[in-house]
Length: 87
Image (cartoon, rainbow, N blue to C red; front, side, top):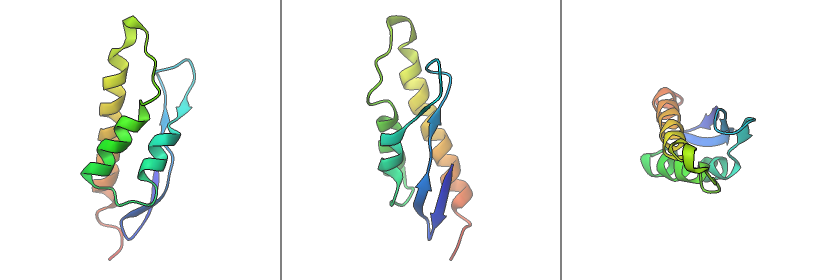
């Protein structure tokens, strides 16, 4: 999901599945993170950006909050995993 150099995210791809009939790349979310340190603020901004263009139907509005939480969880895990990278 990401490539880091000195804890700065150089490259990242975030693909969302299960919320539309086909997987979609969260481009705005990726741009929010790319070139930044993966801190709590950047993670929260990326989670919000992932669903910025969402237009849920009445019966699946729950997917917006669920997807934000999952993006936040995945990025937080990535942050934790990358803590041991580099000096």
